[in-house]
Length: 191
Image 1 (tube, one colour):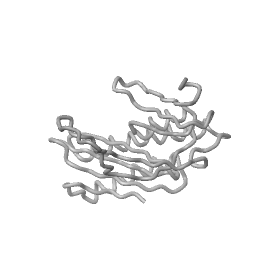
Image 2: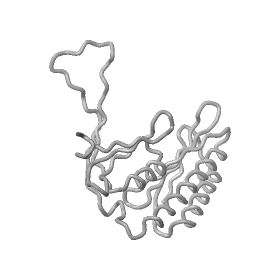
Image 3: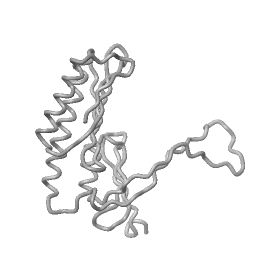
């Protein structure tokens, strides 16, 4: 099921139908099983922004956004980006046939968001940061190549995963210079 809503914007029935049909067409082209998602249209400056989030397999989330001068063009841009990510995801699934699927070999890891201290404030003795958000997330078992593909598909800045080759916890992330970084704190690299 796909929901289309507006954030301080009235989304008419014509736009809602157009967005739903475009995304349903893209989904049916690449996948026959169920999915759900949400598209939010909002004002951004003098234009519009469309944020799209699709939930596919357990644990697979595709995100995209489009920005344009009118709401229809922003929604079309987001739908085009989602279709491109769906195509990459489908290709990735074909490439991985015969290997362990990511959601079948997952472990759970805690995810914390910690409030940063004020840089100019004096640190008091015994002070520790306050945890302002905490959640549990599945920790997939992936190769580095698959983790980079997941980073590209989801648009996330960081992917934490269990390395399929050595079982260690690894991280891939987008660097400020546009390249991708990989952290492998396995025993062989910590000497």
